[in-house]
Structure formats: structure tokens, C-alpha cells
Length: 94
Image (cartoon, rainbow, N blue to C red):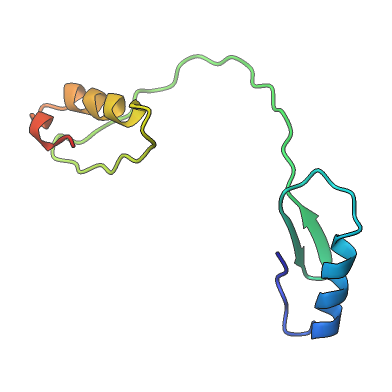
């Protein structure tokens, strides 16, 4: 992806894109911004085990949008919210 600032010429953008085809990289996503090349990278992060935090607070009359795939995790979260809420939301789950 090339973020073309107003001071870039078409020729400069084309040169960067052509040069990109000659760069060996494991990255899937590259961006040029402000004259700099940025490459997507992920690094493992070891987290220290922490004490559990405070539980989430859900409003009894709250409306929550839960998104997800087809694995069923969204329905589990919705069921949990329904259980901890005083309002009977069972008929609203779909």
C-alpha cells in the first residue's frame, strides 16, 4: 500500500512500488508514509501471570452488539451476559 502524500510525484511513487518487488521480505503488508517504508511485523510477547481483574459490569437494560464467526463463542458470551443480568434477555438472543 502506498500512502501518496501531496508532495510525492507519480514517478516517485512508481519507483517505490517497482523497488518493492526487489525487496526480500516475509511481511504481508507494506506501506510508504512520509517517505519511509513501514512493514507489518509481529513479535511474541510474554505476559506475566496476573491476578484476575474485576468482572465486566453489564447494565440490566444495556444493549450489546456481539460479533464473531460461526464457532459459537459469541453465543457463549451472550448467554453469560444474560445470566449475570437481571433482565431476561433469553428471547433477544439470536
